[in-house]
Amino acid sequence: MDVPAWVWIATIAGIGALFIFDFVAHVRKPHEPSLTEAGSWTAFYVVTALIFGAGLWFVWGHSHGIEYLAGYITEMSLSVDNLFVFVIIMGSFEVPRAYQQKVLLVGVLIALILRAIFIIIGAAAIAHFSWVFYIFGAFLLYTAYSLATASHDENEEYQPNILVRLTQKYLPATDEYNGARLTIMKNGKRLITPMLIVMVAIGATDILFALDSIPAIYGLTNEPYIVFTANAFALLGLIQLYYLLGGLLDRLVYLSFGLAVILGFIGIKLILEALHGNELPFINGGHPIKAVPEIPIWLSLAIIIGVLAVTTVASLIKSSRSG
View (cartoon, rainbow, N blue to C red):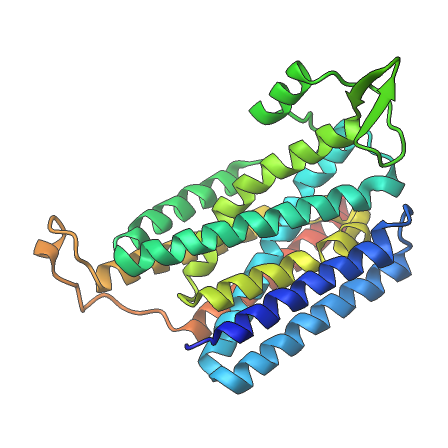
């Protein structure tokens, strides 16, 4: 897949323009979006992502189009799961609903930058070391196990990470919000507000999210352009999706199990690909194992959609019975 430099530049500029538009249209004026507003803009970003995928399919062929679609669905699903953590952080710091959009936008921007860095590192590693797939695969299997055994309780207590603890320890802060301001002057002294601490918490959490998402999508495609665009479009609609799902998040009780299955499947797929192109001397004498089956991308897409469909339906059924 040969992507000219001007296409990269145009794509990054277009995505940047959408972020700026999101800020101007939604975040600049603090408010809590209505269900209609959140639903409309979520639909807009999903349709935009699918139109982009259709264009990619037309220009670079159906195989790359399917890779993009599988990657986009996977990244969007991981983003929804990440919203559970955002809900916990917002609740722990008691962020006013009207200002949560700003926190989310900053978090999404940090996530996109981090993922772009990891995409570049991942592409370079894959190009020079085929055995990286073993590491990616093992990491995804570990992540799948962690997701399957983790609990998502909106009322659970948030445990500050090291960056948040350092910020709280060494930077003078106020306990009160002052609109969406990050710092205020009080008695001639500059103090940070809880808003800045929340953004540090979201940004630090984004690092962990990036570590999960990049190996996952590299298990579906080796094309950095597809990896980047699938991640970017999945993140773009995250802010409005946060408000659209609202109370539905705690009803998706089986989502983590579904994502665990998907990540476990992709992890196995990566290990099979590593074996198929094996170069490690202690595995089959450093020779590829051609008998290892290759999983086609269409099958990967079918499994991802199937698992998510079953997971969602089962979650809603259980929630309706419990409620």
